[in-house]
Image 1 (cartoon, helix red, strand yellow):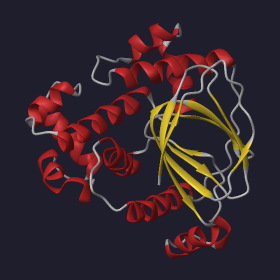
Image 2 (cartoon, rainbow, N blue to C red):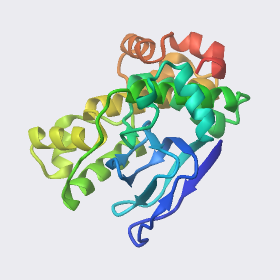
Image 3 (cartoon, rainbow, N blue to C red):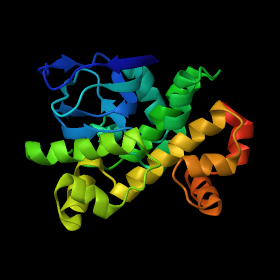
Image 4 (cartoon, rainbow, N blue to C red):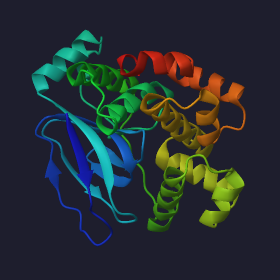
Length: 262
């Protein structure tokens, strides 16, 4: 495991690199453009960065500065073994897409990885690596290669939205407000945001709030109702229901069990 902090920005030109191993990284902060032979994707908090051994790639920060990821690297033979044990057919043991968006199934793993670094929790990174690989294999099964094209202006608008939400997940983010800030109609903004992040604005905001709430639960002893309100939920019952749907348990149970099941 490596805690990777990048300070590159618009003034820095991207350069070609190569994955020496199979690579999976949890993006925990910031955003960047990731280009591989399988396509070009926008990486945002909660998403997974995927790379095959021997594959060339570029990371670009044309529209904002900096990101942070928690990276796991796998020897090809070891990854092949995990993929086989996870039931992946032989032809499905290489990633055909460079990214998984912030899906519900990834929230517990992304939060556990973030908490392990940010809160210095005692957890098994070896176990985390195996679970993350198995999840990535399962969730990418059958996905076609990514082939996205976009204007620079469109990517810049979505990048700014992602950074705004990340700075304050608990703010009153509505489709109308985000679209207005981006200078687009709600219809075009919704379509553009989903195209580049893989989720709708509502889903992105909801998962950002839930990850923030989960970290607050692990970091201190504030009451659940206080954490719910601080994370942008106006009703504690809605928070409890959303948290249970995302993490498979109530906020109180999550706090009690901590990083063992995060």
